[in-house]
Image (cartoon, rainbow over all chains, first blue to last red; front, side):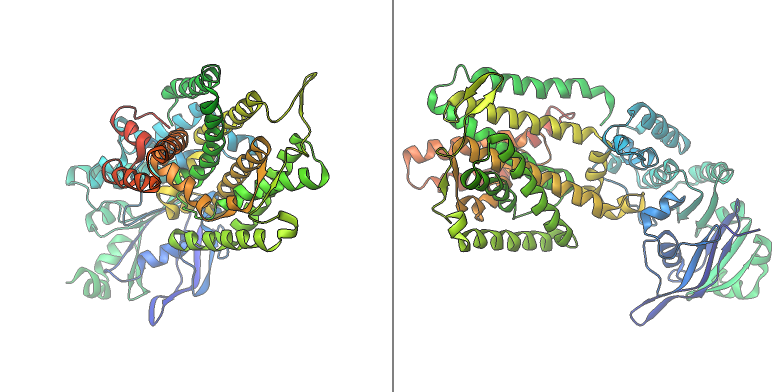
Length: 245
Length: 320
């Protein structure tokens, strides 16, 4: 099977720091893959290169078998690579509705005419579907910066859903969520995974073990181990470096 | 913008245009001319506000676009005897060309760097308009009334010194500007521009090539400024390099800030208020700029969002 995503010798250097060092990551279509590792392991840098936020220093990125290393971030989104930020990056001055409407209208803007005028009803349907999916259906009219931090994280996910992802990259999505909300969140990710491949960066091991089919462990910019949740739990190097046992 | 507020938004803006049309029959001569001038300058500020208020780019070089429209319209009238419609078209074309070229180079910068770069380009444009004074006649300028043929509407022909033509020409320009801004504001593109203002990186990662959208905003903004410059030249019959000076880059910034940045009618309110503030103050004292300065300080202290910005915040949250 062709992997949905494959990185070949992918590296990122910031001055003297080698943040990501020749990483070869393969993600199959339809899986939920967790990416774990201590702070500074290079997880966010790695996915930053995958979504096009950062340019790699070396290496290539293949998506559905095609080389996308040279594609700009907006072109990658149109191919279905959608990223949700680790540090919440919503449009704070705008309503939740407007936050989600921006990605929701993107795929509808195909012709010149559709850039000038769109049926707002269709945009609204997509917006309400995405907000409803994350449980923010009744705050559409509220300004997004009035939301609690955990709900701003959910708004990020609604924005990503509205963009119709094929590969959804979630960067520490449960940060700031209450315990009761985390169970709902896991349910949401499972629903999303029916249609999209999910690459999940997560520190909460309970969430990782509940969701991921495979886990990739990074440390110091390189992949330390990869395997099923039970393999990873038993892996001695992982226990030493990450789980601290 | 959600659909529910849209009918009242359109009604409000159409009503403002209708009121402006009606008051021409009531205004004394002096104010009649003033309001015509305000409407043209407010259209200039509308274009400025498109860039500052809706896209988040602060320029100090818009005089370059205003003057490009002015020279683009005025020079062909003066030298080649262009009629008014052709002159207006060539003025807008000049502004679009200048803003596209400028944007292609300058939009690699943003924030303060963009401000400085726009200032530098505009100064170069201003100095060029002085340097080539054999053609432009520099800061002495030239008068168009000898060369401009009367405007033919239907079977009638109306001379450009007719106050009714000045007023309604200015109002037509302003109406096109306001309704165009409103259409842009509620369009998918308008949503992208506002998103760029709020958070450019996020907008890029949601599938939008922000450079292209900023270039589009700059060309529309420069085109509207040029349309105002061309109309000003045609209606008030004068073209001179004063209009390319830094002062005419600062004015639309002040008008927009005073009226309400990022509101569609703000530029009209700001331009009108500032015009009459200067007009009234200069009747009492030669230090009228001091009065303007005090008014601006008060504005920044108490209404940092401008007059319509405050109205929107307190009473009319749906105001675009």
